[in-house]
Image (cartoon, rainbow, N blue to C red; front, side):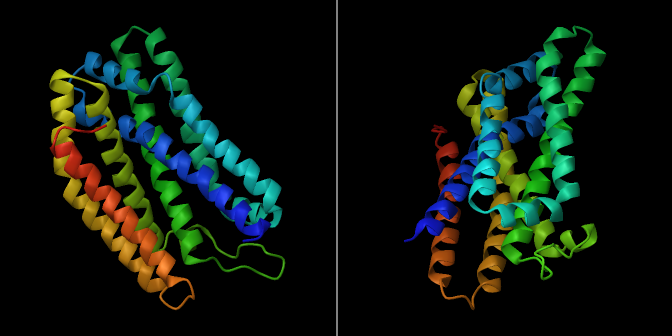
Length: 251
């Protein structure tokens, strides 16, 4: 293993850490209209991520910094090729952050509903677009001799990438519901566990389809065993999370 592989592992580590930790933040935001019957319920759910949501977002900043330091050409190509999706992600994250900080300062119910809507949008949009972006990276992007990505927005929204976006969206929703069940009690916890049970099957089916498509697409590479192994590990982790939720052991 040379220094290049070590940097690749570091980049992967920080991005995986970001999606694991900010993933349940996105999921909690998506769960607001599904689990919150009133403002009190929604406030309880938001409070579950209140102390950690901003810290979790630093993982993507560190990941980007490591990517820039280790692979500047890759960084430049990816960020220029995904300029519009990344801009939309940034705007959505800003909306979400502002809503978290100012929601409790406005006591009027109408303002609370507006901030809740911005939290929902600021959770759905990044989760979906991150899935689209990374699915395109896994699929491969056309590049010219100067390493510029030769793809427009419609090229990025190909069927495989859209499936990747839906997969990450559902995974974040499931992750957030499990996190709410872990951090709350009473009716909210019961509704969260019920949502996990309902969302489990479509999430597993969609994720399995994405993993199978990924394995088939890369079946000709030399390290297919690693691809199959990682896909199997991801599938096992997803099924285990659902099973433990059913047993009431979310943690």
